[in-house]
Length: 95
Length: 333
Image (spheres, rainbow over the protein chains, first blue to last red):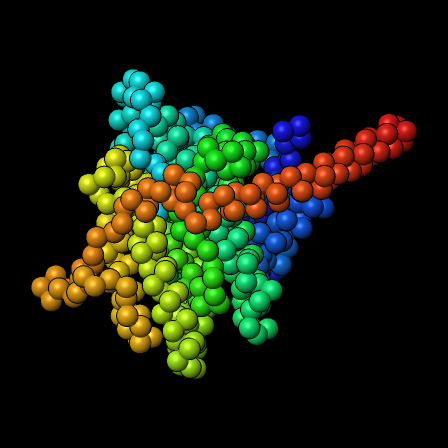
């Protein structure tokens, strides 16, 4: 094959107004316009979305899963960040 | 199912990998954690998945051909619209699956090349011809029915991208089976001749549909490892039995006879017992000598070759626009 590889794009879809765009998959396309069209055909054949984002896959920066502990563990011990850490007398009512 | 050819073990995978990593990996799988593309995984797990997911993807793509054959000859506009939508879905399913395989580090171009050069297999079922309109109904009912039976447990596969693709596919595929059965029901109720056409389609598609589940458990070398890795949840024979149990009463409802003189209901087990599958036919079709193997591959190669100029033009146009934007940006500075 003499051809260059067709770039990969990540697809994000907003399922309803008011919801966030959510990653749903990827498509190959030569440019952004074709990526949007391909994403529409591949991921919204049954009214799954009201808006699509496509992002070049090469532009995504990801955390390293093997450094998951270093990255996220420090929050596990900070239970004072949660409302249930604080005691409020029942008489005060819902807070 | 779509991975009927996964029966040769690859000796190079047996090399030793870090025992601690392997144990940690198996523990995650056992705890029903999903494995994601960037997580550490045994090389054999990666290879098995690349082969399984890509064969599944190829099956979806080649599966468009036998049905595409009837789009222009559908008897009504309603049936034509349904068939078009179904074939488009199969294309979409192929794309979800290629994307899932690509997360494992193989490129779309490599996968396409493997299909076109016959290095990769696809499901044996798509090497049978669609001779009459009833075959379109039979494919929806039996072939998609068998596929759903196989794909529902794959929704719980340990590899995240594959499992997520399967959830999407299963959501969409139910319509495929229902439109097929409804179409056959309409034919069976309309005239004796049409009912005979349906019976003829069932006679031709029944056994190949049972073969879709792959070799029997005694001959399936990969099953045990795939089960331990939670890629597979049920063995080939278990899934085949579920399919037979679900499908036989549906055939009876249509007033049809299954082409198996040994088929009988076992009151004690509650299962339908079926006759011996012709494994020689299965081996022949998987090896490339079924009724339509050459025709299917020729059609895929033709589509690929004749689409080359489109892919090249799209990339050239994208590059030209990129260069123009770049020049405009420099000029503005």
